[in-house]
Image: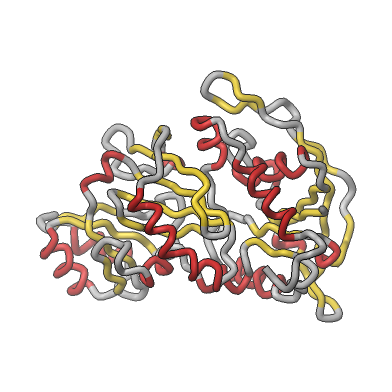
Length: 328
């Protein structure tokens, strides 16, 4: 297969942590051609999607103790070529959020890929549908008490009834802008005003789940099936557990309740073309559905001795076989 990864600039990626690099390494190990590009190199001509792509050769990381250690250099790229993206067997869309105007325009360009010729993971239309905070709201049996609003009075009432809650910007990533709210906090009004941009932007408010101190579990789903998980535990006085803010990762198992949550999501994920997904679960409650560039593969592989990247690429190869009929 020929696989293109749409990523952020390659030199900014951390090969010991980044899931995109793990997927590219797995594809290379399995004998597939690996190409990279960035959203700014996408275009449409003659009603077809094009890209400036570069072949990449990766020098894989090595597990030394409790760390994935990359060689130096860890990659080399060939010359840039302008190609029809439909000449690729598969395209992974993996730039990190925020999902801003540039990101959305990139998904519109990718709409011009012929799904009969090229598997796109995840679906451009699905990415537009699935705000990573809002998408979970369609599964009321799985989520904690939640509201989405820009109205200060509604937020104050919600926090007052529950005593405490967590505020999340709808466009945030990696824990950015997440706040712990308490009913008696004298700064509560100011926190709400700042987060809602003086009432101009809605935010998500969720009931605080005390089990959050025991960890925020990231579960990786492939075609709706859970294939691995890692628990992210907050450190020090930080209530957030995201790896980007210092959360430590520990081994975990997927519980029956969590498998039930995955089963609830699976039909919607299939409907929306969301193949490679990371969900966040705290205390048995679904809190987010990550679809843009879900991470955690390196950590799961290190803790569990798995090869999730290889599993993803083997699944992809099976979908790209000559017997495949219709779009993914």
